[in-house]
Image (cartoon, rainbow, N blue to C red; front, side, top):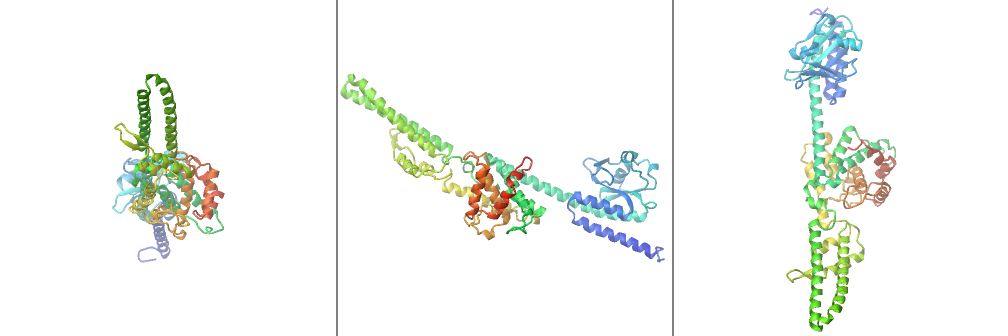
Length: 503
């Protein structure tokens, strides 16, 4: 016997249990997911005190109750009002309750046994306290396998409960931070799409496509990406970077952002009004010629003069209307034929007289420059402004104190418009400097831009044609050819964009 009355065997057993508590504490400290942490706690608690079952209740002060979604033998979440039953009393008083015969204690709720078919005999219920000594929950052990729960069991369960309280607090905090990030990202996407409603859903679809491609790499066993695998945290990082890849558009002027045609609406209205004035100028000149002719030839010539002028005016109106229609056609963001530039220059050389008799050009230099845009609706200056959204995105995302697991979000989003041949923007970096996550996002971004049906300046491209365009881009060295192969073979668009899958 030892000096304290315990045998060596008892001391060894006690030391073993304390070691187990310490080992569990280490495991709990590393756990961040409540769904994994809570089962670990009750399993180890039952083992440490030799109990048949354990239940862990977490205190919800706002609702004045305890809740448990982890209870051995229970199929659904349990909720207990503060101050009621054994667990509720322990949570309210902070005192340990050790019962040797549950059915003889009025605080015991027999309904649970009746519902589950379980028979409770002994109960040990202890408070879980945080670092400040406040009760945050309750650990309840049922049915000591041999005999009843003793002081040693109480000490061990209290020690484990203290460790569990800290671990749960950390896990809940981690969960709150995760929800905060999700809320922030969701709000940011709303901000992006409120600036440009025509691209609604783009960020979510790009995120789903990029994550889908990342998941498809799990099954690649050959080629340059055979060893590339993404953890759960990596996938979350990819998703956030994809959802926020266009956030920098908040720094682009809205008229440029939503510009659907080569001229802005107000510019087009001024141009059309000018053609209307030019039309009136033709009519005025026609009547001036009529008066001059009648004054020269006499009233008898009026019918002939009228007929000739009506025919001439109709021809002039038709020519002016045809020029106006041509100009309006040039305003559309289509690829302009070579002869279109020459024709526009001819129109720009034509003049008319305004209401004050001043000579004005049909097209001013600014209009001629914009209407001569060979492809799309943006001038070189406007395209540069649009492209600046990537730099704005990077600057914005770099201000956020990302966790270590998400620290690459800014750099991944920064490179989504870079190209393997060095012809991307904004930095034109070489292929080896582009993160693989950005290469995947580039494919997803182009695919959605081609197939999206909500853009006012272009029609949606069918999936087959979009994939053909992507194939040409990959063969030309702009996009990653191997990643595109996986994108197609794994049917990423069909699976990632299925109803209910959009990020």
